[in-house]
Image (cartoon, rainbow, N blue to C red; front, side):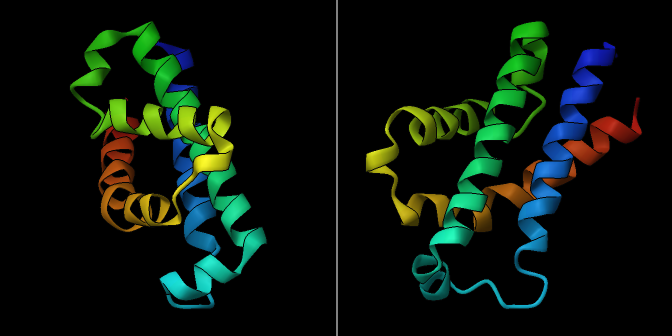
Length: 115
């Protein structure tokens, strides 16, 4: 595997770990998430990092589009957070946290361990 791709996979893994750490001492509760502006911005920033890293991976090796779960959706969320910041849906971000990040985490860890 290309060393740059491995580095970007580690970036994705670290960003997901940071998001997970935000909820270590509290349950994942959507209402509490919506109330906490600092938490929302921290999660959004990590989603930007994840989306940018996935985008770079796919540009470097397009075969990863089929390997990384929801690659295009992740990149789309990154673009929305960066370019349409005034139209970010808390519900969409939450759905990514609950429904997509666990699968992405497993996928990335598998890719890293297979290196």
